[in-house]
Image: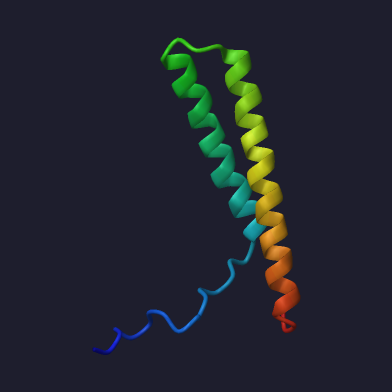
Length: 77
């Protein structure tokens, strides 16, 4: 059975023009959702903010690490 064209084969999608900014926006929105849900369900605002900031920083660190690693493997970038 053959694979549909464009699947598998180890090809990666093209790198976004501003990967760090795009990631920061996405993770910031997700952190805001964590805070809103916590407050809406009666949770502690301070605790929600601390958790959201920690998750944001961890996600950005992981993103930075992965893009940096990918850039080192792709010499033309």
